[in-house]
Amino acid sequence: MITRREAVAGMFYEADPESLRRQVDALLSAVPRPTTALPRGLIVPHAGYIYSGSTAAAAYACLAGAADRIQRVALLGPAHRVYLTGMALPAADAFASPLGAVPLDRKAMEQISRLSGVCISDEAHRQEHSLEVQLPFLQRILGEFALVPIVVGHCPPRQVADVIDALWAMANTLLVVSTDLSHFHDYATANRLDSRTCEKLLAHEPDLRGDEACGAAVLNGLMASKLIQSLHISQLQRCNSGDTGGDRERVVGYGAFALH
Image 1: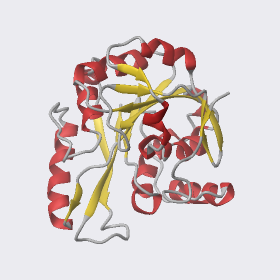
Image 2: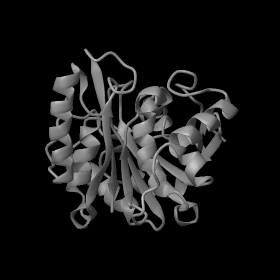
Image 3: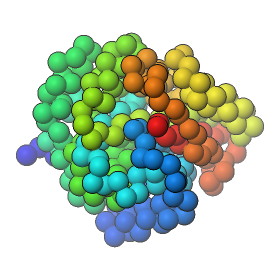
Image 4: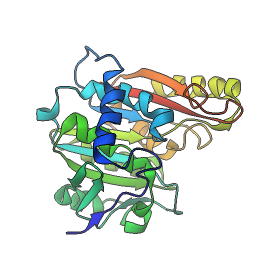
């Protein structure tokens, strides 16, 4: 079995399993548990936990008590480490975190691999953090599940939408979109830009730019999907690294959203 090993453990989150469990559980316990129905999807940030972990936890808390209803997680995030045209699935059989290995859904991945714009590339996944940092949250809140990890590069929204619609059609599947918001503006500018970006997301606007969200290609694909037209997007939390300990002269924005 081929396992994709952790690339950012000890940098973005705790590398020691017990310390990581305590870290994730503390983040989850610090946010209120939503009273709404189980979401069909989440939009979550992917920075180091000290910066964006509290925002990510606001989304993952929506999954509390739903482990028996989610068998598969379709996880899409942007490519940061390699230049990628299209979307990349890994050849691996599992993704590891310090909390253990998560099996990949090879049958679902084989179905997705036939769609336009999808390739197989372990290199696109090897150092990519946008997907990896979601695993400990998913492992603590869901326990056992199968994963379909997709790194998205330069790709037309329609191709991404076709992948999302195919995955959403599979029973007991949760969609997780990994993205941060604006990057490296001063605190006031970032708040202004991120507020507008969130408004666009809530309105299902399909024209996000990369400077508004690093996962713009995934988000625009989501907005072009068939199912999104029948769903409501709610904003759960928004902040930036200036709120969580970073320099306020050069911040990164984070948002958490649920799709119902």
